[in-house]
Image (cartoon, rainbow, N blue to C red):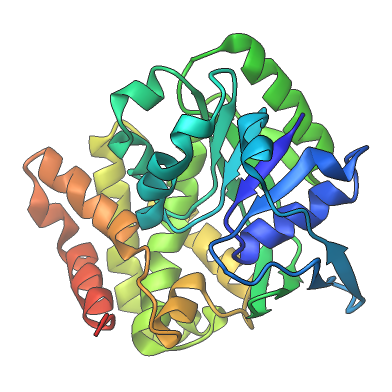
Length: 304
């Protein structure tokens, strides 16, 4: 499948590295980057510390026009703008894969797009960190989970399922990807805001001083998930959060990285999404702590 990755962030470059190693032709993969600089390669550091130069194929109009698979690796708040920018160049049989943190992006897409294109969600727990714009380090082995968000173009979905499961390491298909999205949301809505507000590493969220905050965030998450007809137990969510925090103890969360770099965060699509669901059911009081996290993280971003 001809594949275009839109976005040269940490995850975009990590996915590019995995694909370029296995595709039969380098011309089958291209990258769209907003950077004016277009180097012929970027530096990738593997988990074992080995460093290599990954050859870059920068996408042309022809690459985008002929793409069977478009993987959108930009921040949640930028997805709509990016798709609007390129949608007229996508062929009707193309599959769009959304790879971002949080939820609510698919719902915000134009109906005309959702009714025309097969659209997927891709979730990853791989750790990846940008050291400079064209340097990326794989900081933690993880998994990739993906699945359809709509039921458009069944033949394209079959091809997409086969391609992703055979070309990415530790990659699994889920027909009910919504459940997986909420599972990842359960982790992100606790670890991300706490690390961003208190400027600590992931493992530090398990310190005793944050026990009460973690408990309240998890309790509210479980209650709000039930409004959306999803059943989680507080104990199971707490165990998952603790496990991820320990496994990524020395990592800097994506939200803290954004705060430290003065960039906009995805808080609106993480804790903000839970506030939205609570308000949708006219029970905004159920999202008291998530609203507090939303306000505190947003206060850290000053675009001026």
